[in-house]
Length: 527
Image (cartoon, rainbow, N blue to C red):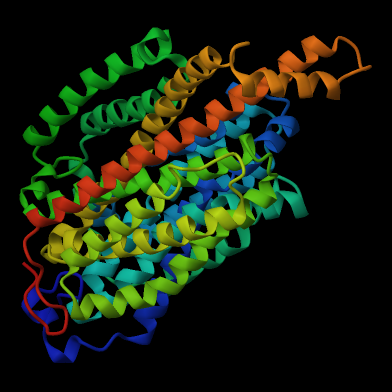
């Protein structure tokens, strides 16, 4: 008997199917919590890497892999989830993902060496990744079209809120207990989610016969392509890109694997991912928008804490409390976005969100080293509003207009685009910060001469400050050099925000290419 997952769009429009069964809704909410944990764990360690580094006696380059290993494994696993959810079914795949994520979290907490930590973090990322696209797919296949304005904001909120509050949650946990509890805290909820999903989820049936046709070569090529791409984007900005041997080798592996992967996908009988879904115009443009939204989502979750740590000298906890403004804004705006989606053309909502995001970024282009909580308040609020208005309608336009049988595969690709956007965003932001800091230092040093009255006055004042503490001239020169460097860093942050402003204003024009989505008030068709 066909269930709701395989029902035709016309069936989904039937008034009898408009009511959401409480059991099904409760099962979906449990799955949303699993997805929240998986996305949260990308960023939860970012504010506590120094504590993990000290606890495991690791170098700064080694401890960076605690985050990189998770991201690489997750990027490989997300597109794979489409095939696996068809083969295992939503219930079994999600339960395996939740149980594996929970077990690897426990192993991360007990890790005693950096090598162990990196291994378990990679496993945690790979297993936990299956939960993210499975929730998106379930939201757009299990529930009728008329309920998308309810489920859409829920998954949109989780996808944007989890990375935003990750540093906050991580800072609090590390401050109150220890870094080990960043991972132990997943165990009890993880067990509850696994049991809840096994007991309640009945969205679809598994098709184990698909496993006989599993494309191992496709998996190998995809892992080589996406894994090395993530590595190049993570490590490139720090090592002058192709001037570093490991980055150059990975770039070559990435290029060769990409060619092999695309050839395999279009020739295999049962491809590991079905790229033909991109023939749907709204899905293709929605994925491009999602990629670009990922740049802002993960880029600003990185750039704000970096500014607060490097320039303001904030602790992890103080950074978390400052960043929490965006999280609260997203939480409050989500229900409003859901209501407006029923009444307003979603293309206008996406354009509005992108413009608001650009305005929030533009306000930061004039930043000084004195920018504190209150100066960041309005830009953070605008960022939260912009993200929700851009993200939720994009999810609906891209996935909500596909035929139900295409959504599982499409969800993996759609979520992959957001993560790849984040990786590209971090690489671009790091490159802009590095290059513009060097440029501003050179320009400022050219102006700091004996002929510059302000520079001379500052140097004289610093000499008087250090009088009697040793070589006051040398100490004053060092202090002046630090002031110049800090000012150059602040100016480079302003440049990065300006790049984001121009980018998102230009991106808002992309919505004109979208086909007008069907109204969500009636049943309508979903093709």
